[in-house]
Length: 257
Ligand code: MF3
Ligand code: CO
Image (cartoon, rainbow, N blue to C red; front, side):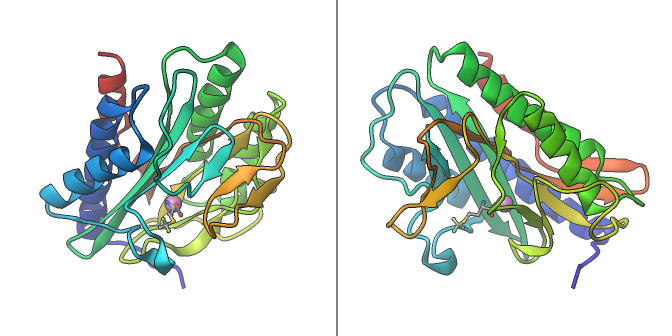
């Protein structure tokens, strides 16, 4: 069942996703050598609650924190811990909110100080793959058009596309139909209709695309322990084209200052 959203519902989803953008920007201010991922989780949790929302990840299928924080070879769903961030790390922060009956869900991968040129390109390509997918999020296209655009772009740089996890519809539930894989074929999959809201979230690896699930029950990491990046935002499909409900500009203003 794919729920189509009214304009009013899309605005509530936008409010949630702007709040997630602001929370990611707040966390970004504190991502420095010496901070623990648990401290970053606390900052995100405080920020979301003080703005009238609930951190939607906490307790989701038993998830034990408010943020997913995945460092270096961790792809997604890293559990905040006493790990101390150090120069050269890449840190994916994934946050969700729930307020006014709807959800927000977005992720951004941050570089800590100087990183190698290869890793910087991994971050740039993963974010650009998200934009390439987003450009296909229009009425009359199919999910496979988004998937193929993400996959072709990432693979053209020799990077791996994680297949076991995917994007999703976003609404009253954090995970709704349809699934949005990061690989696939143009012209296949569910038809995109006006009022659909989806999260596109490429998970891209520097080496082999194979992943393993850690025994903590959550953390996903690359099998070869090479770095991975993850960017995610929410997009509404509208008559006049894709309407991105998340604002990475809020985050990037912090990074550029
Ligand atoms: N943000 C993740 C997603 O896009 C969900 C986090 S899993 C949770 O699907 F358990 F932390 F909620
Ligand atoms: Co998501």
